[in-house]
Length: 117
Length: 209
Image 1: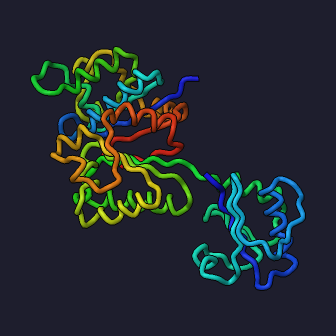
Image 2: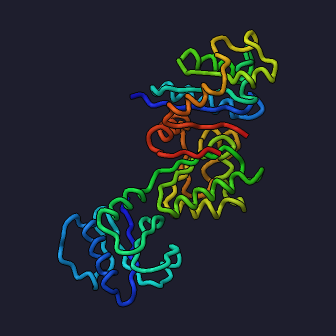
Image 3: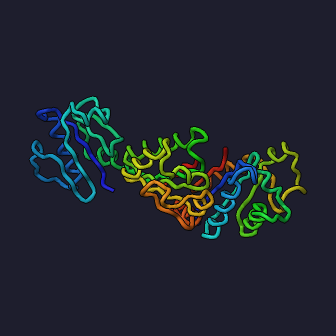
C-alpha cells in the first residue's frame, strides 16, 4: 500500500524558508510515489495567496505545481477567515475546510512533519 | 544491532541469580545447554551481548538498578527477580532499538531549540537507539566548527555513532563548506531526495525542530 506523508505548514511565505521547505518536500515525496497531504495552518494559509508572477523564487507557483502533481492541499477555514482570505483570493482548487480534515489526515498518515515557529 | 543484556547478580551469586542467568542464556542460545553458569562472564553471539555484573556495582548504579537478581536490556528496560525465558523474550522485543531521525532547521544561537533537540538525540542514543541528524535550512549552522554551544556536543554524538548530514545547497547559501564544518559530518547533494527516503522508509520516528 502507498505510504502517506502529511506536512503541516504554520509559517507564512517569504518570512522564512519554511513554506519552501514544506512545498519542496511535498513535491519530492509525490515524485517518489507517496501519497502526500499538505495542511496550511495559521500564517501558512498565506502561501495560497501567492498567485502572481515574481522575478524571484515563487513559492505560490511551486504550490500550484504540487496541486497539479496530485498533492492534497487543504486550508484551515478558520485561519483563512481570521485573515479575511476568501475563496477568490486563493489559488484555485484548494479547499477551505475544518480542522477535522487534518485529524483525519493524521490518522491515515505513516509520517507527519510540522514546519512551524 | 546486537541486543545488550546485562545481568546483575549478588557476589557470590545465589540460587536465584544463577536461575536467572540460566534463563537468559537459554534465550540467547535458543536451547537448553549445560553451562557453567556461575563462572560464565561475558558472552557475545550474533544477536546478543550478555554481560554479568555484580550488584552493587558502578554499572548497576548507572542503570538505576535497585537489587539483584535483575536484568537490564539495551540500557533501558529493567526487570527484577527470577524472570522466565518467555518474559525475557517479551522484554527484548519491547527494548528493541529504534531508528530516530532528527531534522534541524534552526541556528544554534537564536533560542533554546537546538540545545533541546541535541539533548533529545543524546538521550535517545544513550538508550541504545540509532540516531541520525539532518541539518537543513538554517540548521546547517549547527554543524559549524568552533561554535561554543554545539561543537563539543556534535563531536560527542558523532563519536557515539550518530550520523550527521548537512544540506549542501543550504551550506552554500550560508557560505559554509566542508572545511568549516565539524569533522565527521557528511554532505547531502540532494537533501529533499534523501530526506524523503529517510523520513518515509528508514527512520521509524522523526523529530523536526
